[in-house]
Image (cartoon, rainbow, N blue to C red; front, side, top):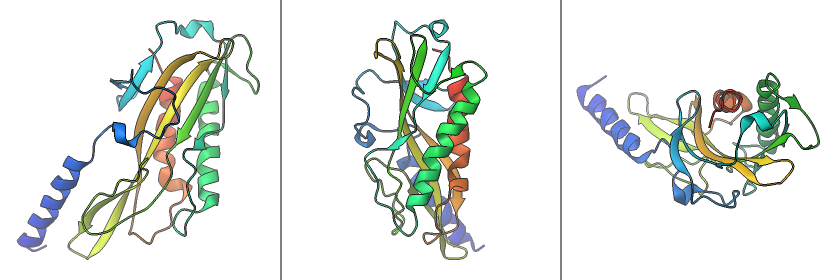
Length: 217
């Protein structure tokens, strides 16, 4: 690769790295959660940066069962040629099943809340693809951002980023016990015409499910 092209590529990568935050920014909150004011920087069980609030009343030992509601997209996205309704449905179903599977080792997975049930409700930000110039385009709430252009072959790679907002609610009192806002990284798409599929997002969904199992306040 020519030195000039290499230098340009490095410059673009550094620029985008500065623009991309490791956690969701306030202007990217979707409105799914009723309160964002108490969120504080924290780490997930796997060490990923998150924004989190935990109620002082939360005691994990009080819960013997868990109800994992099917994740929703909030606000509802508009399917496109690159992000189909089928893919959106697959992403939501997969995340629900992955969380149920991970949590089954610690709780009874139930379909209806009881006195000892922790109810998990979550929202995934609308999935959107946008690539123009060398800018990172942020859709509010953002789901996918453009990555650096490969100056060697003249094609653009897309890094898949997906955002989630999760709330755990006491099944008896309906009071929120914890809220978490975080982002995850999927696989890299070859270019801006590549159709998004479930497999591109699976790494982030699997990481979220494992962190839910290992969560400790």
